[in-house]
Image (cartoon, rainbow, N blue to C red):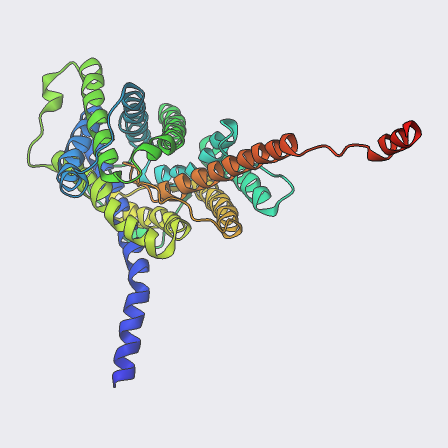
Length: 408
């Protein structure tokens, strides 16, 4: 009896990270569904971004004050610029483009596009020389191939729609109203293409945020909640300014006890707050690659829920492109895992970004790992140069002795 109880407890303890990550994917999927309904009912995505990050700031700030109020880093002008750009890239550019793309396309399509994030971050890290690329190594080849396959999948989804894929259960579901953009006409095809471009730009801004956030982590290494709070707060102020410029009607700010409030509160609390803590706990136990590997599950959940709740139409091009993106994602993750296994040194634990996808921690750790490798290589070269300079050169003693003998 005791052995059985011990086995059950061990199984529950081992299963905790799996249950946590699966629950998070359902949480992310719910955010996409609720947000899509809210946007299609007329809520401005500019206003939604403001409310979302204002709520996230209000939720995270007390924890940052309680747990990290001691030895806070000084906010100098360079650090302020970093926080300003982080707020601009994440809450303002990324979220506005993502919500606009979500409005023009569908939740499943948007989730599939977001899986491009690791590949895009890898490309940007190589461009800014933060990623050490050795084409001869298999792990680097896997990253390159995965990136190419991911880009191919995104292009396929954007340029080819194809016929509608009928789900088994969708034939028996007859909702009164569909909340997904109808994409049967020429005008709607243009909106679908426009939404695809907006989603790609949003993912690019997201990847840029992680590259810059790696620098900010060096200052806020022991104050991760504080960094997240500051970025959310800065993004809220910038989003307010952008909304005043883009939305000229005072009624756009009006929000009641309806789907609009639910979308803002859900995204701010679940996506930007609870996920921070849960993913941090999973990362400590199982590592970042384990957490990132669950992100394609969100796309599957959204596809099933979207067909039930929103009567979402899934097209063949989206299915094929989504499969290619997932294959590319796992190829990049495999390369990261191999790189982590080769690196025996400990990497500083990264901070979870303010966005709502599970890819962020693995990306930041990957960039930091490559920065550590590059710094070690530079230090080794400096030490070697110093040794060569300090090493005394041997004197040719034989000719000198012969000369002395001749003189004697």
